[in-house]
Image 1 (cartoon, rainbow, N blue to C red):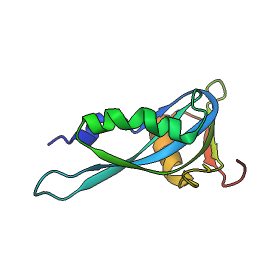
Image 2 (cartoon, rainbow, N blue to C red):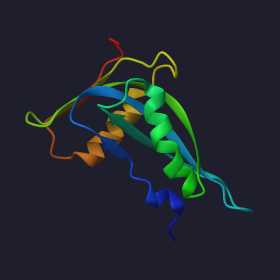
Image 3 (cartoon, rainbow, N blue to C red):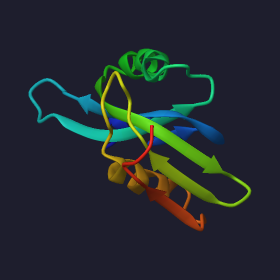
Length: 122
């Protein structure tokens, strides 16, 4: 049986260096156990991590889901080199668990040569 969570892509990121956030999305059907999943979003156009959250939330809520930001950081996505580096933190939301983000990215980009994270930098 499909869940509204299945309608939300796990990863949506740009190419280049940009801010990103890790979001936990919840589905709570009446009388049933709550389920959730993590998603990551990152866009070059975002001046602040909250800009990403503000952009993403309406589409999630339209599906009848709830969500919360679990932190943020930065992503350096080099399409030509097939590499992604996740690092840093969000001043507003704190540091995301970059290992969760890296796991999501590895599923989305299985042919990449390197996807890694560091807790260094801003």
